[in-house]
Amino acid sequence: TSAHLQEESCGGLAAQERSMSERMQTLIEAHRDYVHQLRLVTGLSFTQIARQAGLAASTIVRFMGRDDWPHPLATGTLEKLRRTYGFG
Image 1 (tube, rainbow, N blue to C red):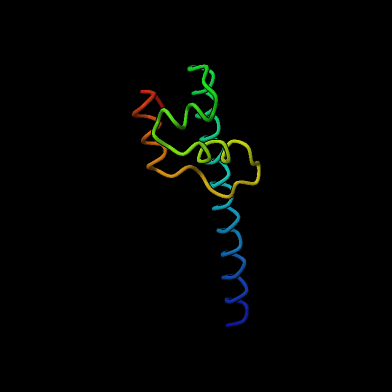
Image 2: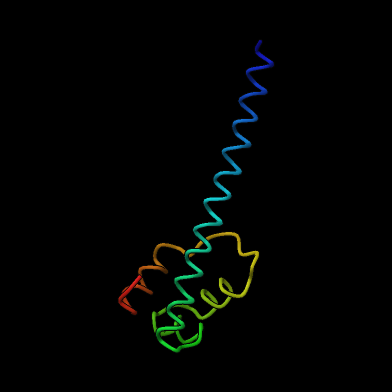
């Protein structure tokens, strides 16, 4: 029936949203791991890492300091970090 198809469609959408959320969380964790590696390799603070890459300190400090940060680092931010530190 039409109602049954609509219910299946909504259930499928909820599963897709959960999957997207899980992928987003995995990406955020990967970006955090990358910034932690930068810190270990360089010996710099998060503020110093950001400033040397031409970023506002808050870009990295907030991302690393808040467990509930809702999104990964922007592509431009990652590019600046990679250009500055040469790996990643």
